[in-house]
Image (cartoon, rainbow, N blue to C red; front, side, top):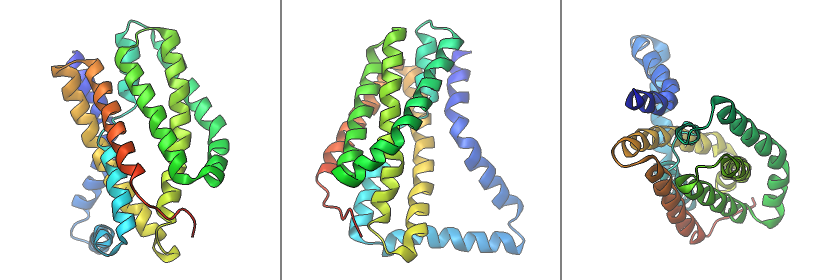
Length: 231
């Protein structure tokens, strides 16, 4: 059924997490599990000792993750508009091509224009894409939106890690990035589950409008942060 498909796709991002949890349960009685548990405790305790700037930035980035559901919902929206599987695949290939083609230029832009400004530009692209997905049904529109989505990904993926790295000592970089990545993965999973509920009980378009609003809130909060962009 359509409902089953939605939740199957929503849970797609949960598989790596579930696999990791299964590993911990099975290895609970041996020394490996004990060592891993210690490392996890260290990772999440890092938030308590990290700088105020790091905690503020991670809070804002995690808020965005809560509104950033799986890309599969974008593909489902194309399919629900009556377009063929070939067009769905083609749109996603276009996204990856634009992402790869613009990553280097946008990385250079971050170095010259500023990391925070570049990330905020990416958030603007995200807002445009998700608002567009909320109202668009044409193939040409989806092609344009996925092109812009590639620019968003290029403007935020590496830039967010660079922002975090600049706020911590070199010896803490792995802990800082690991803490953010772990919490972000959990929230993206939650975002996908919530998106599935909104898709079912409200409408597909509402999923994207909510995400666009969430990105706008993130943009407003990020603009207020004073961040160190170079070590």
